[in-house]
Length: 455
Image (cartoon, rainbow, N blue to C red; front, top):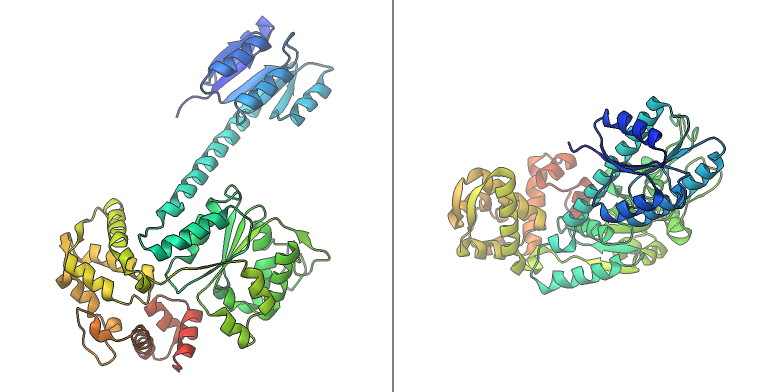
């Protein structure tokens, strides 16, 4: 690992030599300056510094002027102030201006080394965090959402515009269309990108625990509340809260959520007063919320609060032109991750896949490619390589059998109903097992069962 570079600014030659000996023995690279003017020039000419150690009293250009120049030219570099007796008040003023710490003279060498090591450690953590966030921003950039279809490109353009605001967003679409991917892209394209992105699947938490998970609780709020715990809203303060499957929220939780959206105040369970939060909320659902409103399962006022900027992600069957580019993107990723030697898909295989209704959407397509990289070692994928996938029981037509052209599968509703019925039969009516076979959530399965009146 590269040795840290420290700029030492001390006008007294004896003290400057002492600092040089102490810190060189720790393995640091040192740059020495005997005046504030020299230090400010070095700041302008030196490409990289990791820490600045400066005396407060330097003559013409004081340590405070060096601090001001450092914060202007190298705002992320920590500055430690050396101060003599009687100038502690000035050192405290320096810390108000952004100095990391101050050390009083006469110096304690061990204290000096500890403070420098701590400052450098925090700088490395800050750099790592910045690099991580930059990587996440790149990973979840809108350009990473692969598409050539006009339908999805229109959604991406609207999402980019929304990202520049703090508007509440409602993302709707079938399971597997990429709702969470869009939510992350909006967050990392917004001014909140440096804040936290906190996600919660409302269907994955029992109704009795959902409010505590969302809003937090105070110590003693209920029997097992041994200490206070912040909720997801508090954790997302300064950033974005992504609520997936909001149609699964209880009416009681919806009432509290509505208040947060209206006045940005959270009421923890057992709390005596609300807590202000600075957040943006993005909701997602694969359900028909207006239909839930008619059934009395979703609040109309909450729906319109969420409906400020609705984004509907079209299912894959409505944009078959995206399938070839998605196949290539998934294969490219598999070559990097697994060393796959598959070169691509034959035109007739692509044509077959473009006629398939894809009830599992992009997630199902990705699973297909992943499976093919396991079963097929190299070369081009043709229709014959797809046959094993197309003939799997859950993709068979309602009457049994299989057709590589997929035309015999009937309508999308027929395919979906047949898949649900077969999964339920295989699981003996066990909803959890059937949802695992179909790779969907239990609540999604229940919703689909009600849609097709399946018991």
